[in-house]
Image (cartoon, rainbow, N blue to C red; front, top):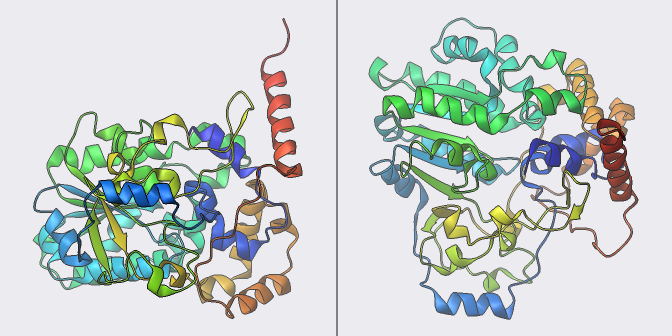
Length: 415
């Protein structure tokens, strides 16, 4: 999808989403459009399983580390609000074998404009935490600025480096576009200035691949997919093919089950990694892992499907799947206390939320924000809301289409 299509997809988000919900969900809206549930596996899916080999699970962390023996780059989905995924990544990078195999970690949650400051901080120099927070708070993925994972990740790598000899210290690379976000005033500025996948690919080519270093990439899965043209990995694989091993989570697959005993993964170890190629998992279509978004193309047509380039088996897009435990029992990441207590930064988040199409974000009071956090404690599960029925009228979608048409008329006036 182009930046324009993504920006227009934002505009279809329900206006009743408030800031606390915006903070928790924006990452999924921006990158994966995951806000949907799929029904139980159909008979056709079962037939697909029968025609392909079983997926063989391995213990996840040893399998990920072993991948670096064959590949220079391993791509993992970043947490995006999933606490179980956060925990796996932390366990991986703290494993003593990790720094023996890996030189660099490129992250989605990092504005490359601030790379020199990030380098000093990760190296252990005296950089105030309030200053280094700009790396992930002022960038093209606003949800990063409210992520508990991110706020722990950077200090953890800094601490790890203090325990490692100089030759094995980790270098953290910020992948996001080098943009001064204090100058961003509208979605048009984002479309004009932020080219995330091109930036991610450029950093990888310059700092990792051209130097034959090994790197872990932590990004939303759509940035990591093979063979889709616009993804960061697809961009750099034109010049550096067959060097990258991509791991996906299972999205919404195997969710909404009546009981745990009906899971396809009931006998799998936790966490586990399974290869995609030649297996029934790899034969699944992307739409069976991640429900298609509702999007508006550049001609203002509405689509309830992935673009053609993504309508292919998962084994063509990724190399393996990560299983973190029962899909219906995944835990969600909580908003960090320092953000919940920081009135000034919450105001900044509200401004960003309103700019991206969440109008109630700007009007939400501090009390309403706090109450949503309190209410959220009653249910710690990572729940993906059911989609709207595409056959029913959608005033927000109709409004977005009309906005698109008006924009086209203004940009292409009659001669």
